[in-house]
Image (tube, rainbow, N blue to C red):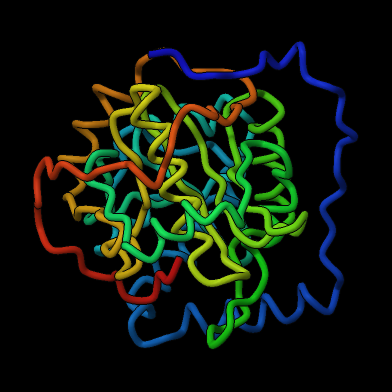
Length: 306
């Protein structure tokens, strides 16, 4: 079934945003990023990161190999600053993605990955009740920048360190302008209170991040998204590193080979390019799970709180 999209050429012209980080914020990010890299659970990867960064500088960014070597279970594969639309789309098709707190961009392909088949989505009773309440409104691609910025904000009780830096925002803004990256917004009386954003490649949706300023709004966003993805014929949603939150939503942990096999079948289909629109005939509160494969019990990956 085709996705309800508005062609890029028909979209109203939007002013290109300027993504800026104050120097105080950059200093704090580098300090926290250094502490993050030196944590005992991650320090084993530090020599490889330093070496890859040095080779990246010496070789003037030759890019990534299509069949790289994977380092540690976190799946570090190399350093590459190429974040143009074509490169990002091709690398995501292979299962590679960029995450970096500081320095040249680091790329990853974890040994264990969180994958959701749309029909496996778990919607809690309380979330269904909120969806039926009529209090909240939902939209696609209405405030892509606002969603990215909200996802980058510090989370209560968490280290105020984000990988959603200005250059990542710029790269995904270009993907959004090209019709590949999308946001889902949750509104409460005109206020943006929750949402998520990600990248659609073929029949796969890659979630980059989500946020909630009001309890359960990110879960409602996931329900609305998956209701539409299932209706549109998407095969899987990728959540990158497994977390307990993703597990609570019905994501299954699959190994790297299984995920790359899925991507070879579903991420090579024709891209659905254009702005997405909410389908008013779909009711997320009535979306019922029909378990496809319970798979392996999901386990949060150390040091990768999404």
